[in-house]
Length: 431
Image (tube, rainbow, N blue to C red; front, side, top):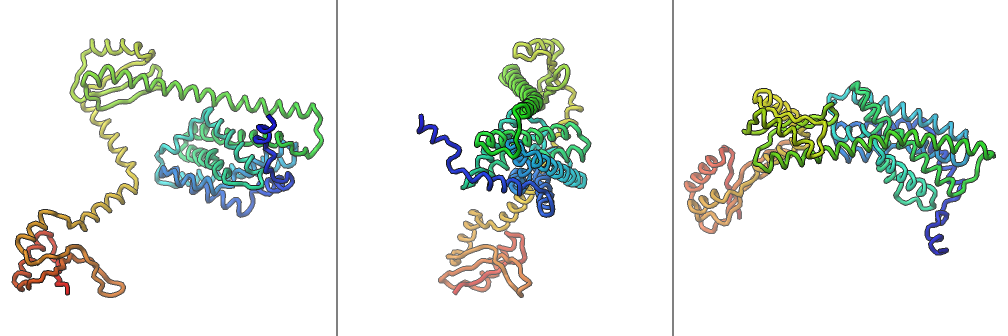
């Protein structure tokens, strides 16, 4: 038992408490450089959310200095240092306002205002976000109190994700969507609060000395306030987790219904939309060539209860004109989402094709028409006229041992120009 206790002992490898407190206190302030670093990190995170780039968002989270005042508040609560607590809350407030303003300004000026998946992921927090914040915070604070800090702290900054919710809240303000703003701000509050609570627990567990004498009554009062805040913040997250679970379950039931009643019978589904938040809920479908009679529709609606889809209405769209409009609108919307990377890839593919001379039929014809040519090479060659002037030219270089007449070389050149639709084709005899 003693061996296990020693193995799990958090005091092993612990940094001196006064040094840890000094480091924590110094990281709280938001003045000068810290404000500029925060503003730059917010812009980077906003761009990442705007273009749906996870790598850019992770980079922004590593730059951000937001963790300082949150950890400071946790240490202040654990040591009953109310001056440090006031300072931490004040600086966290400054950082939050600066972040919201910068992200709001960015999204207000950005021409791309469509909600990407990385943005939408921060608008509906739940109990899982609480667990991430709490256990991420625990890992971060434990690392902070070690002599050897290791690499958990950057990982905590990424896992707890303080920056993206703030940027999403700024996005919600910029487009006037207060549902996005409220959801993202709630996620940010969850992250801040539970990182702070995990810090408080580790500080108590490691027995950091109290800065001021606090009687039992005051200590119990602080504990009650913290417990109440935990409950108040947890209740909405439990509700949102339950709502998410219900939506996932409903989606599975809809898929089972469609698979059994339509796909297994050979009907080709071309349009599907589910309205989970409608009252009543609705499933909207359309098929390639199958047309349903009123009796069939009534029968299918009656079968919904067999799949646990009570309170749901099935609507099958059979008006081809309206359906075409919706499908075309969806295709157009998807085409707008094609990223710049896809365009670059397509251009590069076209460019590579212009360099591709691996045409077996062409090579076969050359070998038949000009058998004395081999061995030879064919491709694009960079021709440099001056240091600042150059161009690519189609070139055939041959090493045939038998001499080829001028007439044959002119015929070969004319033939290659016709084949490649290019007036610029050079034939060179290699020495």
